[in-house]
Image (cartoon, rainbow, N blue to C red):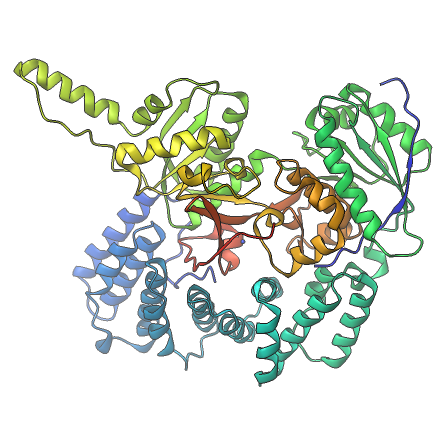
Length: 638
């Protein structure tokens, strides 16, 4: 996505004293039901089925299988389906059977089997089931690396959707797949495309690649594209996320002077400087004539002085404020200043109810990342989690956020163990989490009673689906080998971006193999959108590349990029823009949500996991069991 920014002439003010999931149609179950409740209800359905006559018997059996799949038990769901004779059931039940089999096949990494099941349903006329079928076909195609086949399935799917929100989400999915495709692949596909809608999407992607770094030419080309494709289903709401200039003058923020409030002369000066440089780099790359000036205010060491600089900025003519940076300074401004000028706070306020309509919040909070880790693990089909976390204040905050979101989704936490943040016995914490210490205690008790030595192999607990590790990279490199050592190497491990040091390091990160984590596309992707950004900012990119400050540089970039679209995105919460830090949406509260990119450590390198993310994958509160279909590729060129 190009950057359609706003301001430029920088001056220094004088300082005063210091996300296709598809889900097979089945019984409606609230998201808050636990895996045990779902499995129990499935068992009740199966018991009822034993005493029922066809076709009620088969319908109850299908309902039970759908519940087991939602409970994260695809193998058990498949066994249940084997009891159904497909030849002897009504057509609508046969459709449900094949959709369930296809979804299970995707969960079990069998995309070819899923495709075969779905191919037999081409004549479906039910809108909901056909949309579900095509979403699953797209997932299967992506799992096999067939991007353009996935695009065609999603294009076809759009014809069966009857809700504006679902249509927009489907179009955003099409665009994500196109963004990840090499330009040569797009050009080749365009020469052979026979479907006019698909050809239009390919033209749009090629326009983005050729003109995305020139906002004015890009806007003009998009307008020409719309004239050339008057009946193309790409919605105005979707196109507006590609170029804010297409939104309309009343929904673009008209800004003349931006005040940037940062603690440059403070112990956080390096972090503040990175945000500053990302923001100003985007400003300098903006070719728009008459763009607003940016005035930088160094608020210094003391957060309590942030309100003083805020008032100074307003008195000197700022009609938009970015900052201050950090929770304490943000809270000082909110608590002490009546905010009547639009402001993008670079931090989070605990009480959002008191904020005005023109207050926006943007940060890289670990709590938001922990929420997304919970959603990701839940949508991957896990329901029973254990948590390892640092006994620091940071660790407590992160594990609390994960627990809250996990339980809100309907998951269970049956193990919760802290480890010493400043060194100490990490193996003891892992042993306690996995109940290995209890196994050893039972062995010692028995050996003492018998008075003999015993051959013994400690057993870990077997009742967890996944482990969330709230740790920073140095701790994670010690914890994951301990998890493996105590025979939990087969349990999926999830983490926040803090387990990645912002640069490929295969030697030191080999101990992280298997960990799934969410991070910025700026650090993980080399797709069209990120290449455009790097081409615009060649000098400063090299300054921060492969350092932890690169994330803050990206925060500054996105803070500048999103300003013109804030009002529009807030009034259209389903719309998003492709930022450096994430895919960005704005909640009605003004909080900017970041939808992360996901990677898994393999051979010491983060391997990006691409997935078709259907509506329920974007909204895990409505999700049962997601069916992720992954295409992996190695990170490079970041």
